[in-house]
Amino acid sequence: MKTLITCLILLSLVGCKNEASPQITSDPKEIEADQNINEKPKDTLIVFSGETQELDQEKTKSIKRELLIKADDDKSQLQQLVVSKEFYKEEDLYILDYKYPYLNEKIDSKYAVFNNFIKDNYLNIEKTENQILEDKELLCDTLKINRFRDKRIIDYKIFDVKKNLISVVLYKENYYSGMLHSTYLFDCVNFDLKKHNFVYFNDFFETGSEDAVFKIINTIIKESIASGALYYDCWELSEGDFKAYKNNFVVNDDVVEYYFDDCVICPSYTGTYSIEVPIKKILHLLKKYNDRPIIS
Image (cartoon, rainbow, N blue to C red):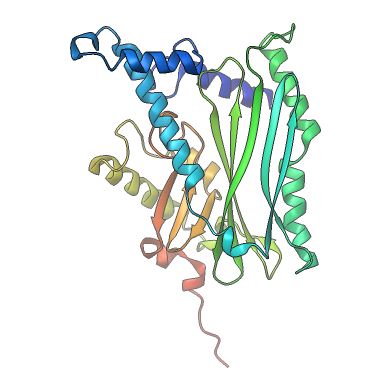
């Protein structure tokens, strides 16, 4: 775990792929002042070109975040089934701000399978607190003097899929004190409400279809970059990353949407967090479309 956190911090420091080197963090008032400077006549823009690039990247990252937060989901239609719960804790060194889904066990007591999974994997507060303190020790923050507190934020989107399946994407925003940008991580959970079990790649796709799905995702990425729909600084998914993220998808209407952490397919400051694969492109790879009819 220490190695993972250290890697994340190093990524934030040096940027990912072609991301520009971070400048000294400024408070909101300073940023506003920089923006006013860059609105001066064109002949002064050359002097502040580095700052302009920094501000442009911050702006695109903010837009990227807003698109994620404001994206539509099916929470309003699932109010009887899904209860949104919250946990908030503020300490001197950190802030924990969690929003997570909880299935109504009054409807079905076996929904506890899903609820226990969320509790065990995301609500182990003591473990999270220990990790934050360990990270600060790795950064030699022995005096516990911080300009900003660490933040751990969890929120989610949920989608109602036909045939008793719900899809959930949990997005985790981690802000480390002293870092210029926060990082985003994603976990996708597909749960069968009738069978009370989780649905993974091998349950959803035909056996042996990994290579085909991998190639389809990369084809969509290449076409999106070529058309300008995806930022030119993004890149194709590696085979190793596909294996790591092959279960990280949700089903939403007529698409299967794959979510990737910061810097897996795009720089953190731009691009996208997800790739939408139209169902029609993968019909032949889905198990539910290939079920043979029962012959009496």
